[in-house]
Image (tube, rainbow over all chains, first blue to last red; front, side, top):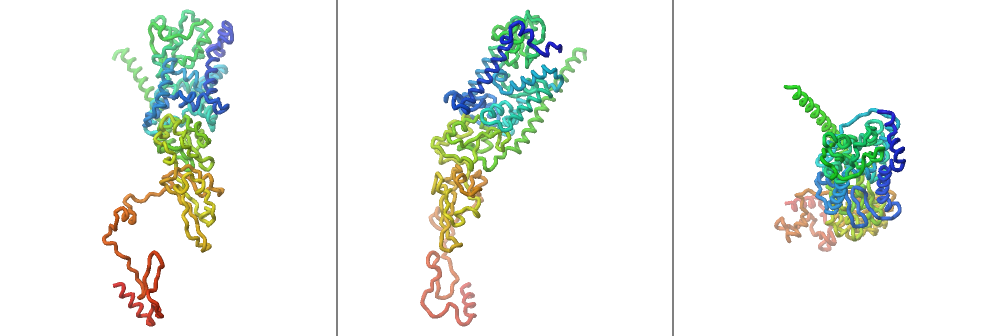
Length: 292
Length: 286
């Protein structure tokens, strides 16, 4: 890795300016904070727009929103749910089907800023090495969470699931959650680069399955302008999704990133000084080939 | 085997080994989790689930730990277990000694539950069975000592149904009564107001999970007097009058005066010859 990649984005900032080179990142952080803020407005300021947490919530006393992954676990555990949570989970599933399953990871999940920070520090301080789990591991873990839910007859993964535990902790009381956050941070920083979110997290794996036919996608629509600076690969949490779209012109692969694990975070759009990437729809794709 | 075939074969080998590795890793983690869960799923006896909660194993399958019941509890009774608490992470509970359930008529916690972990079938809060109060310390309970505390009885939302006071003779003073609080499981909801109100530094009456607070008779066991009443007469025919082994000239009234001397006589029940008495006993045993 060249020394330029220790500080990706220098070119983009020079060409587009700092704000423009960070617009999606900032939007993403604002979204993460806003969603959390909506949940916290009730307990902190008594403004009850949303009650509950990301597991299941009630907006303005009418709209149920529920996590389809937790509902699935509950089903595997053998509980026949009430219609409220089924409706809530269907709404959320439909939403993430439209915008991209792992938009949940990049734009809402509370673990994302932590692992992003770990990745940023790794890059900045050139921390190399560490265990690399196969990216398919998450699907095995996803299966494991369902099987163990079945065996134990309970939402077993929710005993350790950092996503829901951290979110619930922020809203209902942290307890020992800080330790869990620290553990994930250190895991990503020292043990396994992008280890949790991009390789292991079964919740992300579940959401990726919603993205098979997602309309909203990032497209390398001006891929002929690519100067091979490699900075998009350096910042992308799931860099395996980029090559088919960016370099697939010769094989006749369309420019849209169709990999189900693309989180639509838009960092590639920010970081590219050649304006290669932009948000688009999968319908602008001539032919596609999914990559996990 | 051609070179290309060999490459495919090797690729397949590598793929299978990788997949097996990942599967084993996931399985190991899953087994660890299952073991851990078995050790940690026990609910502490003082942690009480909200009204309408399914039986604990079903509850853990149903509850998604969203906290909507907690939010809709008007008395801040319910809490979500935090990471590190002894209650399964993220699930709702309350500690009666801190804040008991106020037994709202509209049961907002049950209404709020999106999953059915709190059963919507529960519409009358008096039917809730969160646990069962048990007077666990008969040594220190003031009413057992003959004092008139009975705060548990007074605060009970189902006074005279869930807790009654049973008068007993006070053998210590010989002339006073003990008013013993008795919990009735057919009415007690386990709301915990009695435990909360108990004036002792450590409550003498506690709400416990029903299986801890309540004994169970053998399934074959029948209470003779109840069966007799149900049948409308003695089941052991014929109902034999009890025979008392009494000296001549005496009879015994079971419910009433007790030992009755039938006719006034200056004779003692016992003859001057002790052998008479012994013979008499022998005769009546025939």
